[in-house]
Image (cartoon, rainbow, N blue to C red; front, side):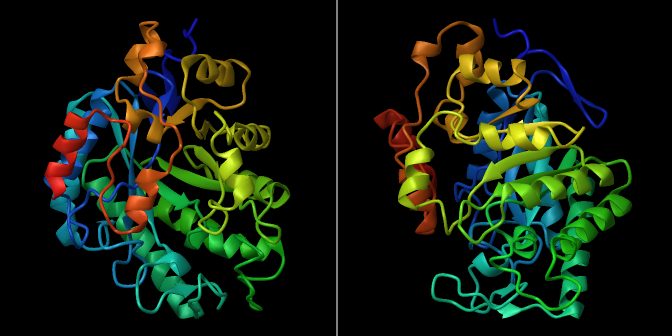
Length: 369
């Protein structure tokens, strides 16, 4: 029944043992200042042991001073961070999964005193500073240097974070990009920054696979929509990205009533992936509360996506793949989309799942208290 789900699949020369991916999920497990902590290593060891073929580690900042999303965001912005990243890559690969690290600049959502962005657009009561062209070039170099560190640390691939309304997406969005130069205005200009980043990173890392976390729709009236993001997907495919990991929404839309209602429905982002998959010839990953094997297998069988991304689903129950293949789906501990974990991390606290047993909650809470 699940043959397609557990068959091998190739991404840019890497032969995955199945079509299951751990999608990136920030939980606040890094140490203060973004160090690779023992808690972070233990978490990713559990995730790799789950049986997924590829673990995509949560975003690592390329610029801790101006682009980090929190004080517990992993760092990939200096060579001093490489040893910790090596331990992280080794931990995942020792358990039989490929290891990928996502790199990011949070832009206007950075947890810093003076955030930067394509344009000065109000962000929850804060006004970021518009980037100069010189600063744009500096940040592009930061992406390149961070990607090289990911490669040198022993990861199997790197993912550029173009989702969740972070900097790459901020340049694409007509809502957040009001520039009057050649990085703003018509869509071909708004996609220029991200395409330059991809091109420069790929040139620097050579044959090392470069994936892309892809924002298909901001779910905001004046935001990025599918008609433009589909064009951007074609541009990325032309540049030779290893895959597109498709998602929807930003911090400005996630908690809107209609989006909260949407996000409790299994597979709520699959249609976005299906639309983008029609536009490209590179592998497409979909995610969004894909909480059972039937749904996952149907998505692959119907050609809506090539790979299944599991984030909170597999964090809630790391035995999800084994329970599916063994026909024990009724035993899966289900994420009920209560968002308690997200509320914790938005307060700057490490997350735990309220659905876990009290013993497991106590175990994990004891790791960071």
